[in-house]
Length: 225
Image (cartoon, rainbow, N blue to C red; front, side):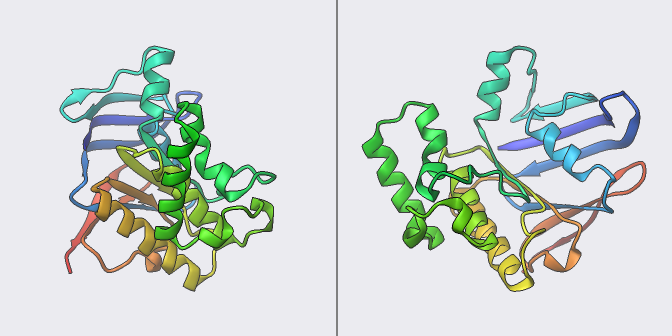
């Protein structure tokens, strides 16, 4: 997948100008990090990419085709192609880890036997097999985020968005979660875009870093191993 934002003006719901994006391109060839001060509009950019923030002007291009989400059907279809990992997990607390992970596939009416196989496979990869039948409310923050990542990728998304995925975690757990996200993105060749306010949490991998300032989004640096 290849995503381009061209001459984009990001607006608030009341059409106040936030910042300008002249040109930015996200691809599956690298992980992209978006940094900036709190309240500058980092999460707003992710919501635009997720189809959840229609308040912008300019071009949003996906694989060389302009994105047009002008009907409910198109919007639902597009959103189902996105894996979104939130800072506050957004899991259903009274359900088990298994039920949360399986939920996107149940919506698609995938047969239960296939769901079970896919959930168990992901659980092994993310080291949460022993947690599958534990209620979410009983899990630690790091465990919840692993479940949230599993839920995001089980539907084979074309893009993974992670909004402050380590914001509620301790430094050691944060590092593990970042490494999991990178490993998943690399293994399945899925573009990964991560918003963070903590520059120190950005791992030493091939990546692009963009900073949102008061009026613009600019590339900061590209690092290779």
